[in-house]
Amino acid sequence: MNGAEKILLCSDLDGTLLSSDSKLSDENRRAIKEFVQGGGKFCLATGRLPNHLLKYFDKSEFLCPVICCNGACIYDFANDKILYKCLLGDKIYQVMEYISHNKDHLRYAYYFADLKKYDIDLDKIADAQVENAYKIVLVMDTPDSAVELRDNLRKHFGTDYDFSRSWPVGVEILNANATKGKTVKRMKDILGDGRITICVGDNENDISMIKSADIGCAVENAVDELKAVADKVICSNDDHAIKYIVENILKMFTRNG
Image (cartoon, rainbow, N blue to C red):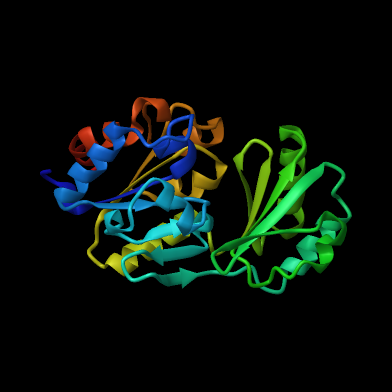
């Protein structure tokens, strides 16, 4: 594909690359293959753990490292190696203490560490050993309670941590240096070939990535907050958004310089 060799295409997984029923369409798969064969670099940027991606791809298909845990980890499937990680650190216990006193609407909590998922006992939130975790996920009872907790956490701890939603009732906690946007920049440094970044996503946890991209795209089903910062709103995840980007990539690149 003419021009693909200049591009790093970073895509969110759920709600973006995958359809609403969590399927990877043949159209998107073929588009990724065409793009990569033309010299492009395709990078998944997801809140998931690396092993989850093997539901949709074979290890041999990952010709570029993947961004996992919302930016807290860069994983290289080719060498089964973590290339970058940004852990929560000791200050997270101040956050956990606050949550332990404001958990009325909290229904479930877990964290990712050592590339595995661990549940958090809601009766012992402040005692959870999470300083070496990549991220914490809080599952609330309603979207309104998730927004309220997110906003309160940002008010009290927003300097050291990033708080965002990747679905309506989920609040995710990351080190402030571990957002998708900052990790896309680190991915460019790892690749070291000065590629133009095109990023696409659908939810709050993608905002930093879309803002950091040379061309930031929001799928039609994206939240309004993401659409507001995107350079372009494209088709929905159910209409093969990656195929759309690949088919229009040179036009988008030319228009944006």
